[in-house]
Image 1 (cartoon, rainbow, N blue to C red):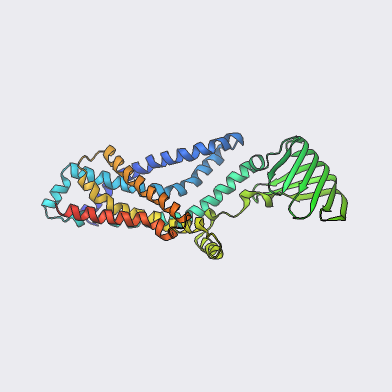
Image 2: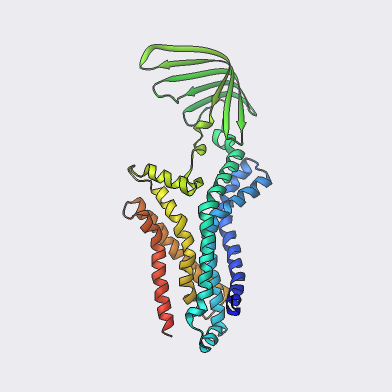
Length: 360
């Protein structure tokens, strides 16, 4: 690596770090504010809160890294242009392509790092995040049993309890609606909630009770059973325990897309997620193509002007991305066209800016 290349990369690192810090703070604060109520309500320990924040970072980094890279490019070349370094290099016979080459090649490295985070790190961090948040909140937030109330916040179950003391229940009635066409009512003197936070299983252990089973279409079919202990698995009905595409790896996500491809409507969310895994990291290269000529033309070279320019480009990019999603859900565009459309438009913009810059 030549001295000029090392100089540009060294000058690029501080504004890139500044961008990472600023954008991470802004986006992370929004996420933390949404988590605050859950954290306070469930008295989640500080260690778990720190792990939750750590698990949130990868899903934010695929947006933050391209944004910070664009900010760094605009600031770097804006400062060099303001200090007449660009003019001195051009006067010395250094071509425009040579001036932007080190940064443009660096964009491929950053693209690779962002792509790795998008395809491999995010599914694992999302899985750990869900494990942590469910393990800390599921009994209160999902079950939410109240005394002397018919609790219907669990799918397929209606639970009535006379008294609740911690995980111990007194005077329990359960309406089990898992089997269609069959009515099952369970009465028990006592009950106990047995939870496994690691496996996310919740069992309602009932004691000293009766099971009444009937068929509304066949009046003569009626069963009454008594029991001393009866275990009722509730975790299978927790909606949070279902498989989420955000925790799927590449192979699993692709298999799920192929499985649902013939459905009507098509699995738009899965198709969008698949394309975004590649299109958003590719924005690192696209932003370099747009940011280099813009930064050179920006003679102010201040952090404020660099931040303003980067913010304008970023807002435009994600506005087109949001518009593309709307078009996909409306059936107007395929997912790959919609999710890559902002990149295509930015490439055209970058080519135009380079052509314009070369004329000077």
